[in-house]
Image (cartoon, one colour):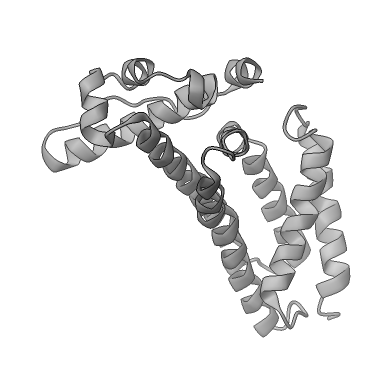
Length: 225
């Protein structure tokens, strides 16, 4: 499974050491974390080596230890950084609902489809795989990753739905519950049809999942106007 996943992964590549001074140190740390995630996705936690991570980042091996101390800390910080990146992608998509326009259904279709594209993307897929693969050794990491991704996204979606309800465009007394419902309608079929990420989905399949989820959601929460 490690080799299969690693062969297909196209997650963020190491970006080099960066500039000088404080910003250079931050850039170098970011490059190391990006490179570490690539290598962990390629090899798995046990198979990844600090030497390979350093080479991917374009830095010396001691530099990795200077920034991140040891392999376990490197793994944790790389996973957290990847989770934050995935969350930011999702939050940017949800901004579409701040001003959805006259056709709310079309806006929801667009948002749902773009959320699914992120979810089935390489970085999000690698993040899920690594989190599940290491759950026995790093059980707290599941909580950390979920708080940075699923919880943040659900909270942001609940906020957007609450604003739409206040504007009379949706009918929901519990925006947090409505957000959970919509996300479940999206991710459930995605995981089932993709066989937990082992089967690629076409754009048409992904769009169909998004549109069906939105239709079901609106049957429960449309304002009726």
